[in-house]
Every structure is written in C-alpha cells, then in structure tokens.
Image (cartoon, rainbow, N blue to C red; front, top):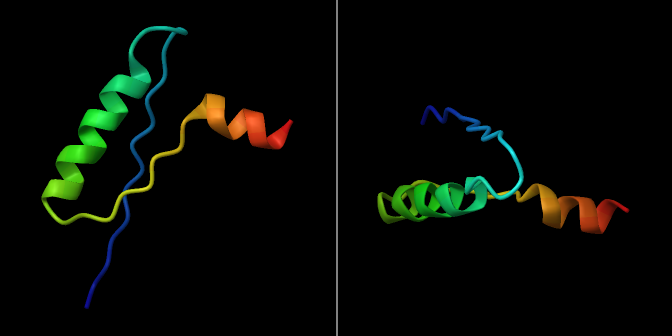
Amino acid sequence: MNHQGLILWLTGLSGAGKTTIASSVAQELRSRSYRVELLDGDVVRTHLS
C-alpha cells in the first residue's frame, strides 16, 4: 500500500479565521476517510511555553 502525506499550512493575521477554515477542512477530509491531524498554533504554543 502506498501512503502519501500532505501538509496544508494556513497563515494569516490573528483573528482572520484560520482555525475555523482548518477545522472545516479537517472535518471534510475525515468524512472522506482521510486521517487528519490538526495543530492549532495557539494550542501548541501553550504547551511549549
């Protein structure tokens, strides 16, 4: 079985809707049986600091 990965990196100003868009995209991909890992920068920074 050939597995390929993909990274979708959303950038933009604070409050621009990146998390909202990322959540919607992740939900759609999961509904199509893709494995998805969503990393939110605010959450990641909380755990690293």
